[in-house]
Image (cartoon, rainbow, N blue to C red):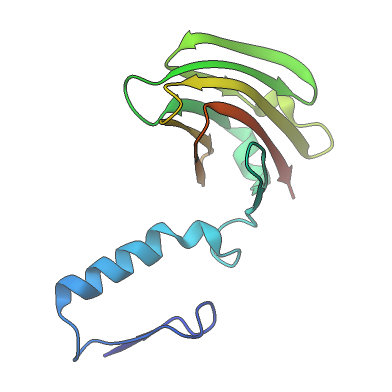
Length: 160
């Protein structure tokens, strides 16, 4: 059995008769966990990143706005502390001071089928990181940020 991802990874072709089941499962697990990087699979997710700034765009199914769409921010480890400001369409809606997580409903944020989320602040310890998730009925977009302890992230959501 051959497994080919030639549409997305032209250099990847796995011949299952030459590699063991464990290796095949490991490779497929890595590929599946990386699907968010391929727009054909992931609700039009795109990301650009510099050293201290990350910008993302995500499409949300319009039917998901009938149920809850939630932004969740947490530390990558149990000892990560967040000091963040979250703005929805420019309006300050949440200050996470010395907290472990923040959770915000995004349903009222959508104006003309879009919502802009700005997250700024710090986390400690600086070697850890944060996890940002946008969760709806039909999707879960997860981004992990790590590094210097500073956060400057913008997420643009669109509902088509």
